[in-house]
Structure formats: C-alpha cells, structure tokens
Length: 127
Image 1 (cartoon, rainbow, N blue to C red):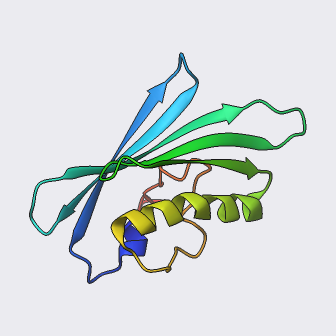
Image 2: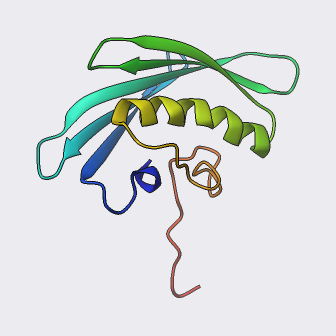
C-alpha cells in the first residue's frame, strides 16, 4: 500500500492483522493519518478460506469501509502467481477507492517476496 501512495503523499498508514483461529478467519484493519495527525480507522478486510477439491485456493473476502459503513463481498480464486496478482487487485482497488489513490499499483501487487504479502525479508549485509 505504501508504494501506491507515492513519495509526495502526506498520508501515513498503519495495519493490524487479526487472526481468529476458531472461525478460520484473518482480518486486516487499516488506519490512516494525514500529516502529523492521529490515526483513524478507515477500513477492514475479513478473509475466510473456502474449502475446494480442485487444487485452487478460494477465499471469501468482506471489504468494509468504516466512514460510511458499506461492505462488499468478493471471492478470490488463487491458482498461480498471475492469478494472485489479478485477484489481489480487487482488494487494492478497495483501498485505492477508500483513500482516493490513483490507479497506480506496485509492479507485482507487492507479493513477490512472500505468499502472505505482509512479511518482507530484510537482507543481511554479512551474507
């Protein structure tokens, strides 16, 4: 998301991942701040995996915008990295719309280093 904001943007973002193992759900909550202001919750993505027998990972996502209370449901079907980028664009589009970010995206959806898209390895200069 930070790469979509660009260098000149004054918006800062915070993320919180919430794991609910009983419901087999992962949520991502986003907060935004303009300049040096305090962070305000702006949206949440709830992801539940849907069991399938066809070798594809399928997830049901509920995208919720806190400002107006609107939610939308999208289904993500992931079989390979090309599909993953296309499907992740649905979630990126939701955050772009919510934060008024132009249609500029990371080259690979931000997922090249990790299948989770959240953890990036920091290289060790001694390697």
